[in-house]
Image (tube, rainbow, N blue to C red; front, side, top):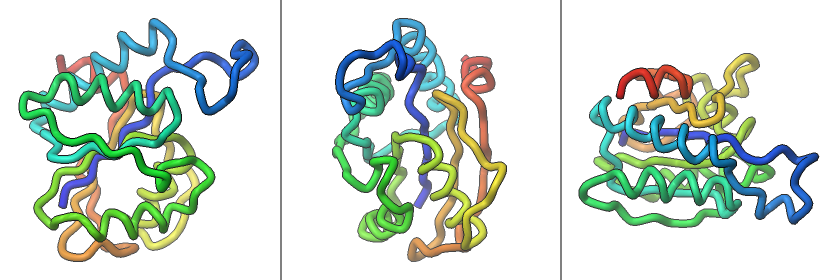
Length: 165
């Protein structure tokens, strides 16, 4: 399985958002840059067969932007396992239920995504790993999805992804 971890794009600052935190959306700049980053993902040959998204608005917006650019339009599933407060092992358990030949795009939040990556790569949380907004990494997971069994293919910032377009 190939697992793309993709952080949501630039959202309104918490201080500037008067609504529910769950509904905090991407800014106009965030929408544009997320689209550009998504195009960069596709230039790397990463064509998801399934998209999993956190239910928070900014993650769903990011997932829908990425999905709109994929020719085969993969299914999009909203997953509680991608909520920031849910332990990363819940996402790992979900990934383990998917086909081994899947290319899964997981759209979520920090520090949840980098914590998941750290566990998949080393078996523990790794300080220093961080996905920037609209940044992504690709992990290859051979066989069953287990801690310390992942292999990092690449880890790119949003500006690096945008530069590929």
